[in-house]
Image 1 (cartoon, rainbow, N blue to C red):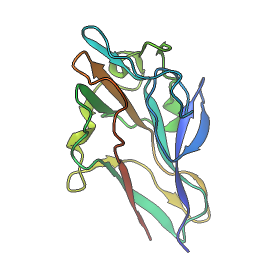
Image 2: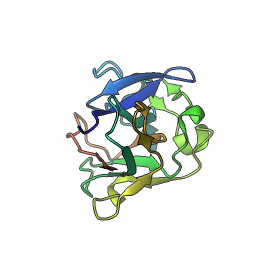
Image 3: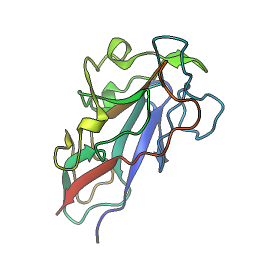
Image 4: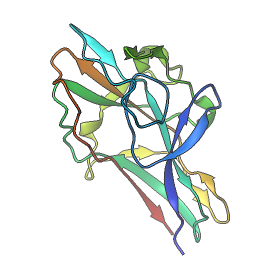
Length: 178
């Protein structure tokens, strides 16, 4: 029987509190809560940021044999005018988790300057099904728990952003289960 797999988000002080999520909600606070109390803020000039999000793939039930070859991608278009969804080029292991920081309700701190394990980032729209981002990690039967390293994401909001809610975007984890 195939494993049951979920996406978990880490928040709070290290080592972080893991929460299973079905929707990743970018906001100006370090929380998995999906509400509008700390929305992204369009700046008068320059850029503001969401708090960065640290997510990973988790095996809730054991695979028959093994899960590996994990990939992560978008449909190639993030339809958020004036905004960019960044993904860290690094995929640190869970022990390198760092709590997101910033000024709540205003802006998160930019991840490449403030996350100790992140030094570069790429526009998430460049990762597609035909050219996905490889995510380190695997899990073997009879184990459950974290499968992958951390995927760290952050939204940059520029003064060219449209006001209002951003449309939903789909990001995909793909893996082999043998």
